[in-house]
Length: 36
Length: 96
Image 1: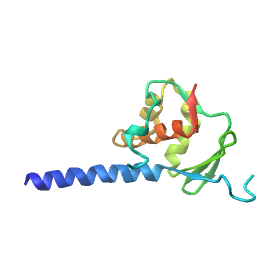
Image 2 (image 1 turned 135 degrees about the vertical axis):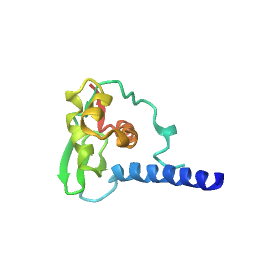
Image 3 (image 1 turned 90 degrees about the vertical axis):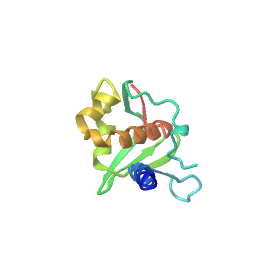
Image 4 (image 1 turned 45 degrees about the vertical axis):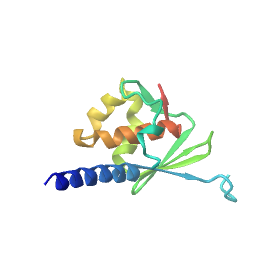
């Protein structure tokens, strides 16, 4: 049972990171021709 | 280590007043907005319309915490706090 609980907590933690990554994403455009 | 790790977050104080950096332009998109910084030439995707509202309206609140309290459901505060911390690193937002 404890294993199940630990597994669920891990999943929640991973999902939290995914949500965060979905909120902000940075793209480097340095070196792209014609961008600036 | 993922870029979203708390270890990368250094200078974000939730109780400080913040505002969109004056050199950042936001262009609204269906997914949220594109933020372009004319100084450091970084391009950042804000992938939530609610996050765009927070970034735009931050300067109208005495702190980031007050802005989140007013604009974002409590159960999502953690994700938005980390997102704002990343926006500090990218200089999309700065101290007011």
